[in-house]
Length: 345
Image (cartoon, rainbow, N blue to C red):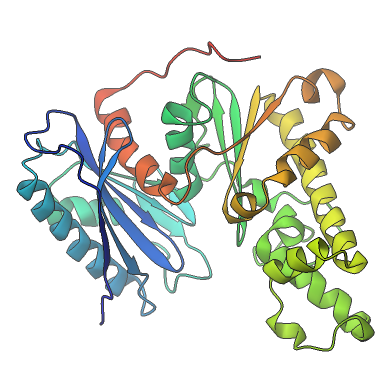
């Protein structure tokens, strides 16, 4: 297998470092990012490889190679003993036992994997594994946009829609770790089928995939609107057409954001957060959605709940996953206490 490694180094006075350092790994459908991360969230060294398409055995082999490389780099930099290894991955994760219960459709054969046990067996370091959005929530909660808040909901808008919830300063895991699948909340019981098996999921309307699929359905019914290859349409095309003033694209995005607003009100009613943090690839490119969403939410739902919620863009970009994954080691190994809610309200 060709690793096609892209290595990015960011070394800032690392010699004889005394700060706590951990390995953080973010496993996604297209790439795996692994890094040496300080307790302050600084990524000292980062490595990226395309996610293996052969299945779980090759992905675990990739992880083994990357961790070995990071350990060698840590030795070169004379870093202190690592606190542990933290992993964030797409899918439903049994947090208590460190098992990938159910993966994601864009990672082949990523199901029923005792990943925590396997990594600890190979390297001997304490290891934690959680859902990819949950670890992003940790990064944002302790170091980023939600620092100082105790009750926060996180949404990531990208290929899909991910969610995470911080309640009373603690990440909500549910019975075994599958809580806060907010993208799979139905906003229309008669809506389009979602890949989860449900109908009318928020993800089917407002994710990148959902927006693209909605547009494809519209153009199949109205072929006079577009003379290109409908199956090649992406969400990027829809946003571009809307920016050019094409009414059919503007109308579709309006409906997508409306669905997102109704879903957000449901979330606020359920969790009574003081802050909603929104990130992901779509928001990185179109941050205006946050203001639009906030204005719509303010006019819906129970006033005492929706009016008091602040909206913020996520502070971390591409490195949020690797930072949050690493932070599991600092948080769970030292029982780090979250700062009080000095900024709430």
